[in-house]
Image 1 (tube, rainbow, N blue to C red):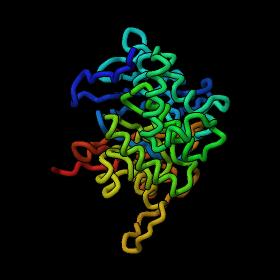
Image 2: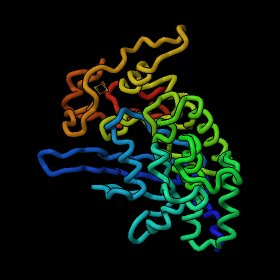
Image 3: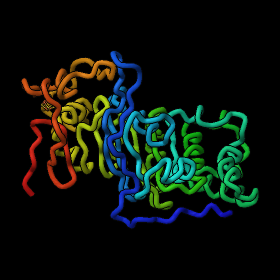
Image 4: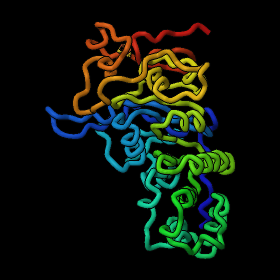
Length: 329
Ligand code: SF4
């Protein structure tokens, strides 16, 4: 067995991952937590889709639902045109093609396994010979910037946080996946190390022909790494669009408030929009109508009565707000 890369099926126009109406409600009627509530989006082949939002917005639950780590209340995941689950692509095969990297680099690694054993574990389970596995481990360590002779036999506690996260990335690449879900992968790292790991991710994406789903609360990091950005608020998509368009012309008051809340280094580019105020989102008590209405600077009477539909701003940019308007091409 060679564990060869999995070939493309539907061509470049077919999304790599489609998420349709995904929901996860916890608890019983009366006190239902709507962690994710009807989320739909696509990840295109070769792109990085960033998901941004405050804690409690449902972004991490979304990633766990996609991976099948928790069962959805409703919704469907389609990978390269194939439904994931009974009658379609098996969860085992899906998990070979889609890997995850988490925030906590230490908890993700078995402290009793050497770095080499950790990275080689999945290829060995999938039947790769010991020799081929060792060669792959060395190639992967080199690819993530860790000298194989120096690091292969070390244990996780002998590494820095940044080095451990590089090992986790190497491990995620070991089965030659097509999509990597990165859930706050640099949030625990120092700023200088964060930049190095982000640059590494950019290089690896090109080298291995990957697509990324990149989840973060940090708007600057998401701006740097993403091709398109999805803004989540209380389990719903508030806005989605190409990174430059969305950051330059945010259409949802929540996106505007999020962007206004981040510190600007340039006094000429200070934003005039009021920053975020009010209570942070709480998925136990989801407000009626537009979920953002208790915190929205532009709230109108109808906002608490009805939920706004997604409005197409332009071909690739949408926002769920009554004030969002289509911009003529
Ligand atoms: Fe604000 Fe109303 Fe738009 Fe919601 S629908 S974001 S409350 S203006």
